[in-house]
Length: 304
Image (cartoon, rainbow, N blue to C red; front, side, top):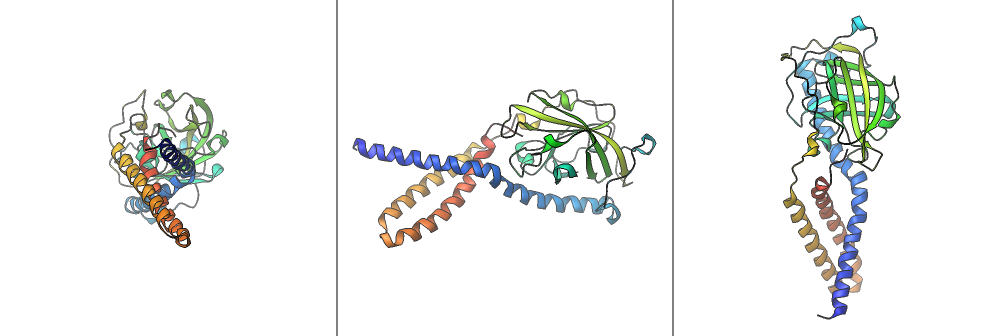
């Protein structure tokens, strides 16, 4: 094997690797949203069914958040058992940033790819204590992309099977990713939203705090459980994710094999047929690359 042959081969490998890297960037920014949109459609259906069975049609689709902010009118929801990880927890609406998504239970990679995730071992929305919810900033439909625009007084409405709860922002700050004290237990009903900061980086965490100011309980027949113990340090689930390297390796091998096959086939067909081969093969190649990216993305360092 001559040096020229080796040089050409290495050049082609570098070229394909460069193309994959260039394609991976738009996949993370926009392609991941396709999976999240599909998950949100399923979660909305699941959540709508849960509301119908638990509350009835009267509170299934509230037209507006509850009114009033006086302390005597404020009611908190009874503590409920934690829902299964990955299940629909609440409808989260933040008009200021145009957000309306269903939050899921859990903050692992798989859950945050579906939408905003509720930290396990923190109270559910409407309950006493610090309700904590995390969300991606720039990927997977980037639910918290504009979280930095929230200022004190901005409303946040959360609908659960227990009722409708109106929170108002009290402040925000940026902390180190290791600072989990922002989700410490609180004496009153509060809400904490977390995401990466600045955009396209995970060097910090942007934290927005809010307080419950009004509520409308559904009076659904739910079984209260003893008050959850205070958790002074709640560690996000995504801090220790379980990665499946096998899937990434398998899809990587398929991409490499398909790339070689397309290149050989392109060189062997007649010149007049190369355009058709390039178009048909290119479409199939992009589909395979999409699945390859889906397997690779969870292997990257955890980021909100």
